[in-house]
Length: 116
Image (cartoon, rainbow, N blue to C red; front, side, top):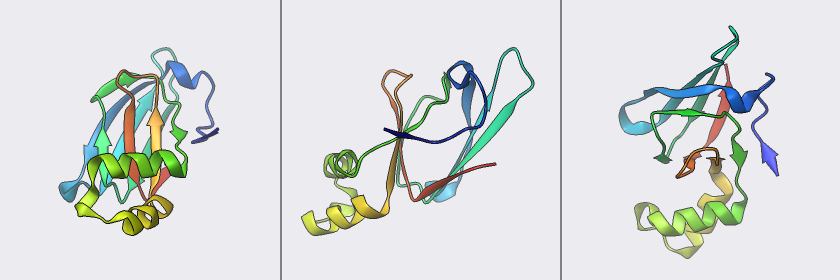
């Protein structure tokens, strides 16, 4: 499995929250900080097409979903009523990010992510 590599120790102990979700929902900023240390991180997701998340949670381990998982999500939400061929192309373009420490899992479908 592939994960977003956040270069901090004890990443599962970090408190995360949505700092900003821009108009048009194209950019998502998630801040993370450890309750005992001064270390923080910022994740900037760009080209966000789908978000299902709490506004605050514990645990910053984001798994990169497989192309099949992405395709399944696209089929469930029927993004812009895409036909099957368009769904397959979209699953190759967008990336599915999952944080399974939360219930239900945090789900982000975006073009990419940067660690700031």
